[in-house]
Length: 189
Image 1 (cartoon, rainbow, N blue to C red):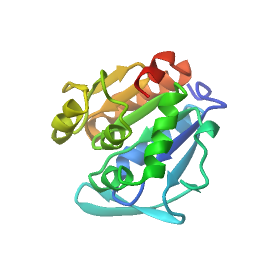
Image 2: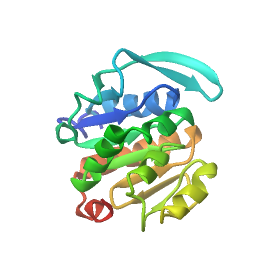
Image 3: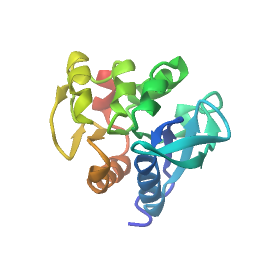
Image 4: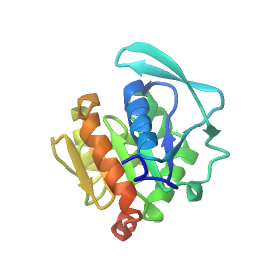
């Protein structure tokens, strides 16, 4: 499995308030599968990770959103944490960055509160997905079919509910990235 994703580049879009394990554990799994990852944020330096309600580590940023080009990546990961996606969805560059992956048919994965940014990008209509339970109404109002499952895959989009789902989330994310582009992904863009 160490070479399953060799030559694949994965963007991880996050900012202050990210749920730390939802960034670090998928990042580690992707790198163990051979992928190169890049943490992309609206600002340079570091972003503040959180462990639910407690401050976590400062996480180094690899590239700013202003410098990042979606064309340089094979897939996108959107970790959760309440504050992280709430900030990202108010930034037009972040929303356009996300939308570009759907327009190109590239795999996207979001966990916990991460789908909030997908709602803002208007890419959830007609999709079956899951999230942290408090996003259920937001996702349904945006046209998604929300289900309470550990992991859901719908045309190249992988979603999970919470940190306990990370092992299943990581497995499906790696599978979808290994499969490559999904023509059906473009239908929601």
